[in-house]
Image (cartoon, rainbow over all chains, first blue to last red; front, side):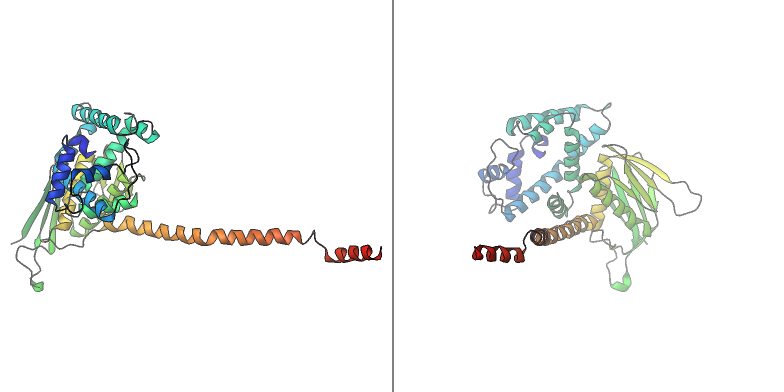
Length: 151
Length: 195
């Protein structure tokens, strides 16, 4: 979701890990790439057990990215609210989201098919954006962690 | 002279007015005794109320937002405030006045304004300059619920299968008693021996 908004997502992700002093957990982009491959929906899915400190680091970076992307997240949510007036932002976002999913995810999976279906993916996208937008405070890390544990 | 603190997030702004508690040796820029609060949302009527209303309103927003993202039915109802989802993008808020003969204030806000409001409340909760009863619903509520359920499930998973196994063994073996008669067997053996 964040990579759909930030075109240079992986670079920002790595830069933030340096800024947050997470170099010992995520020393390079390969480590981040390996962690991303734990997602079973990805084409390049590999089962690596994510360690607790890696999980924490990912949450910290996600919260930091959400903080600086909040104005964009907000505009995307807003554009969906009044589609008649301002549909361009939402349509662009949805188009890029689908492109990224097709490029990186296993499109034979039923769950991925649901993500690709524009009629069905609205709810998933909006809820994900809302989760990110609710977790931009200083306690955002704890909030997001609790939400993820609760899923 | 009262202190005034504002928390802004895009189209929402929360203003807290009050005094420090000098009896507690607090700094003069601190607010511990809140006398007034105002929530301003762009293009919406001003929301303000008594100090005892701020906590329940913040809790209502937190609980509602929690329900919204967790696939539960997003409805929150209380004496003071009702929040329900009209659809995926629009939320109806009904603020009920504690004064008699005052019509409730009805607001419709979208997801963007909802997240702005939540972020204003977060800023207030995290501010070291305002002492209020901190809202910790989003941090504690789901966890407790989850662990409570997990404990129950673990307890049942642990005890129910052996219990069912023992019960079925007793039932099955007790039914065999009707087929087995020791006296008949003894008589048969005696007859064989006589032959």
